[in-house]
Length: 206
Image (tube, rainbow, N blue to C red; front, side, top):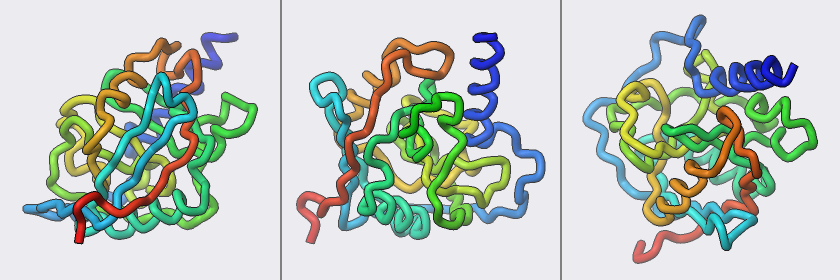
């Protein structure tokens, strides 16, 4: 029974990262020759267990994915991300941002989103290198909402298929620490919970 439950949880998690694209909007535009420009604000992801996992600072690319950056900032300022866990962790990504991961039902972690409308795809030709922050989605390309992931290594299979809206500029060692924590399948044995995500002025920005 435990094996069946684990398999079901993994299947639901994979769906939100878009591994099954049947029924997708296959006409999504890809922005070519994209040159990311750091936004005037950054996002600081602060973990509850600061001693073990610290924080992660992300520069945001509003010139590449304005809709997703706006949504991410909005949810952060509203406290939607306060208390969510990294519900999906593997050798490629750490994924978070599901409001359902705050409740006492681990079976629904990774299946939820905010109460706001989904965000349209904002694909670009930027490569999914280490530290890229992307928007998780379902099979439909235009189903970005609240969930996000950070890549732990170069992932060419993600290129042009997920919205990139930022990159880690500080704390990548903490992201890797989360990625290396003991887990059962893609679920961490001991939860890593986000205390809050702060939107702050970018250092040295005018």
